[in-house]
Image (cartoon, rainbow, N blue to C red; front, side):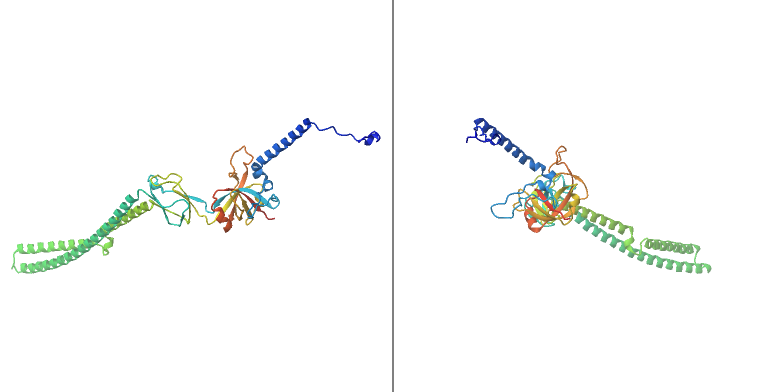
Length: 383
């Protein structure tokens, strides 16, 4: 278009034709923008614990039409985001061997990973079990021997009492007879019918009979009316008690060679194999998977917003659908953040409270397969 006839204020100036150099400059700008976008995407996961739920990008819906995670960011006014992990409500138990059996290798391992067990079910036995069984049989035989000894002592004391009573009767009769003889000799001696020697003999017989009577009475007095109070009987009873204590100790030693489940649960892992000596990690790891929880770490500046009963939605990369639960415990102690690391230089080394949410039964059934899975939880806070 020609613009010679137009006023100078409105004359149209045509732009210069685009050159190859200008096109190269535009491509450089586009590349810089793409690099900046990629860097922002890479650091976003590291900023999630610090920025909260409002900065967390949600997953896209799948093709199967299952429950999807909302693509919109949570509202910071009604939700608190937190990192957490899935755990059994009662924790994971590391079933250990008693102290007395630490040096004994495992003899039999009855269970295997994934097996359900009931309280009292046998888990493993130790190689010292045969020796402990023999020790128990010996202790039980000692008890029988002591019971026989008690009966023997009682029979002996009873016979001794019978003999003492008989001796007392005989001594009493002899003394009475010697007393009559002595009296007769005294009367005859007055009439000069007997010699002085006969009188002295009668007196000696009387004295001997009197001494025998006193001895019989003393022997009977040494036996108490209740024979169970006699020292010999008491000593036999104490030996019997000691034999029972040895039996009980042998029973405990035998029981400690068999490891049984203290709970109804599932074997998470078998730590040792038959022939190996158990270490500090125990023999097996058990957990009751009938109740699952998510333990969350809430930053100290947000804990005031959390209340018991708040609804919790749990998401994780390994979870096909979100899990649901409610807050059932709020910690009272400020802790170091431990789920994502303890690097003191990192920005995520925050001071947190531990909050526990119990999952509902459908979510528990899913979470039971993901013990210790790190998840992201959104807590619906109430005004």
